Length: 152
Length: 353
Image 1 (cartoon, rainbow over the protein chains, first blue to last red):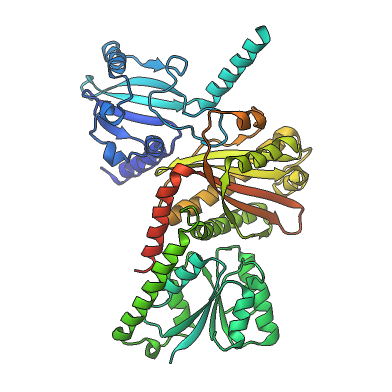
Image 2: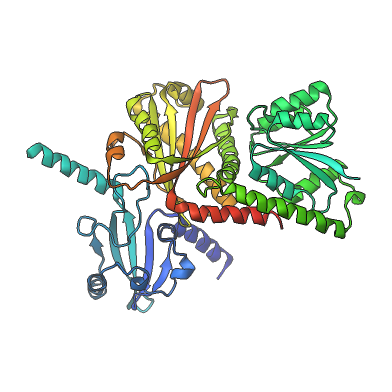
């Protein structure tokens, strides 16, 4: 690697670890290959400890059959898939970012699953991108409650 | 010859840190003082050729102590040890006759460097290693003593938190002072264990008194989570706008932006100072203006929250010469406390080495 390559890698890594979005890469056996700062902070599992561990071993609460089916589809159609909080409030059991003044206990998540092709074009890795949508979800739920009160 | 020195700080955690930052085999007898008055008494008794002096203390603070030393020409060399790192504080204590300024948390090397520079420590002051072992074991005794005392209160080391908060507060204050180009008056941070009802009261005040705005920001990392609240008193808005160079009318939008910018500076600097000392790593959520999108009453009445006890660090910043005040309140969840306590014990042990 040339000096500038390492320089680029360095700032990209800083960004990867500081972005307020969860980024996970898993291989075909659902073993974690990459685990960014957001995931470290919210799960309290170090990137080094997560490496090569099965996603389903680390988070037994994840519905394996359900997620595997989603991921298989992504690999087959080579296109992204979405999981929204309305469908499933969360995939990773994280606490709310604001544990004290918030009205909901856990972090609502929107998730995007994207296929990562290797140099040969074969899909051998999958990335999960986790968005914290707690505020939007909590507001929507409040709004629905109010609407229900008005119409009843 | 044994040199009598005084370590004056209101925090016992800080006194211990300072004692441990002294050169290892320096032959001294240490007198501890928890405020300026005690230090002055000790100097008058001839117990303090050298005084290590904190600035923010109750009863008589560091500035007042320096004034008395200067006015009465008391025989002591004063080295200020403080978390207030604003240049203005440095200048003020120099003008009051302080020899030098050490930034908290005290680094051992720095203390030796200053003492050597001023010729306070000479090679002959350093004792043989045998004697050193004796004093080291003495120090060890006082440490284990203090450790017991520290954990009396609900298992929470309030005093240690206060000192760590003190250093972090100094950094946040310094940033605020630089951004606004003013002098920020630093208080003594208050560390308390709050029951949820007390927190309700704080939050309620922000809802009922329309002149208070609150910004809150969550933080999480290394198994520790909590929230930072910044409370502003609205009378300050116009003056703040002036200080932050906002031109024209202060609209609601500008006011909101200002509050969020300022609280981000305070919260960011505080958390950075806090996490660096304890070797933690936090990520912060986006700031949110409380009560803007959701009423505070709703948050308070939410039954889902199983609030137990919360560690609260309260810091009241005020800006000299302006009518501007704001409170920074750091709330840490109960489940984070065991991890934090371990980190504090480690911090204490580390400074022995």
